[in-house]
Amino acid sequence: MSFPKNRMRRLRSSEAMRRLVRQSSLSVDDLVYPLFVRRGEGRKDPIKSMDGCFHLSPDMVAAEAAEVASLGIPAVLLFGLPDKKDEKGSQAWAEDGVVQDSVRRIKQAVPELLVITDVCLCAYTTTGHCGVVKDGGIDNDATCQLLAKVALSHAYAGADVIAPSDMMDGRVRYIRECLEENGFCDTAIMSYSAKYASAFYGPFRDAADSAPQFGDRKSYQMDPANSDQAMQEIALDIEEGADIVMVKPALCFLDIIQRARQRFDCPIAAYFVSGEYMMINAAAKAGLIDKDAAMMEALTCIKRAGADIIITYFAKAVAKLLRT
Ligand code: PBG
Image 1 (cartoon, helix red, strand yellow):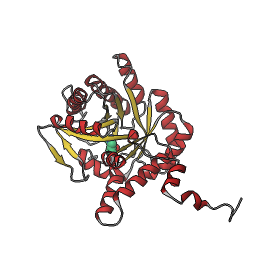
Image 2 (tube, protein in one colour):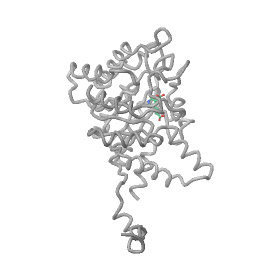
Image 3 (cartoon, helix red, strand yellow):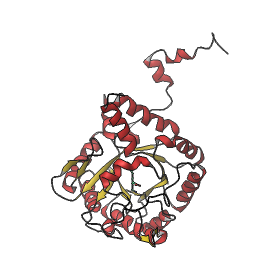
Image 4 (cartoon, protein in one colour):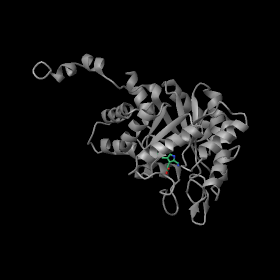
């Protein structure tokens, strides 16, 4: 059937018609809101590099979490900034560490809110690398042992989901085995499986004080030019015990999300990262684009590509918008 019998515009003729035929839609149920925690009391300091985001002290995080839950957002993702860094990042697994402390406070105040914890060493090491440095390189297996300790300390604090973001080989297996051995068989793992060495993490590294002090992350994070390798990474993580796999960043990697969706049956998360978030904020501030419209378009397209879960600093703004 062709024109004039077929007119594609018929199904776009009104908002009701567009709603009726719409294939993808964003729901508050899909969202995860990241939070940055650091030591102190009564602190809610704006993060310079990331509009609308704050460094919260553990006593302030419960109130923030309660607000997130009241907006209907199912989960938060915690990042910690330690008081002191060392070569191995030992504050990352401290029982009284800032993330561990915050997890306990959130679970006590808002037990129904899922708490996901980022597991990595880069904010905790003096080198700013995601693993321990040996002979100028990153020692993969030694790092995995430390990551398992970090994960276990988060599980003891009450984390529902452990999210390793370091990109060491085999870390999901180390973490899963460690959790099982210690009786945490119900703790989920959301692995940053296809995490690319991206320029879009810039604002976050400022916020988390986690920039590498020498070199870059290209020996562990993926080359943005590759797609097949992402499928291998995801397959390995599922085999090693990940419950949810992630593609990160999101917008330049929609093809990876789509391929993963077609190939794997487990939930797929996409991380709409700090640089993507700030590009929209900066363009809106410059009067170049409509912020809410650009936000909704970007996030809806991530859903369309196949993501089930979207981690975004826009989560609260989206939840508010969807309510109205
Ligand atoms: C830590 C980590 C990073 C992000 C999440 N976890 C930074 C990095 O790998 O350098 C980036 C998040 C964002 O940019 O929003 N490994």
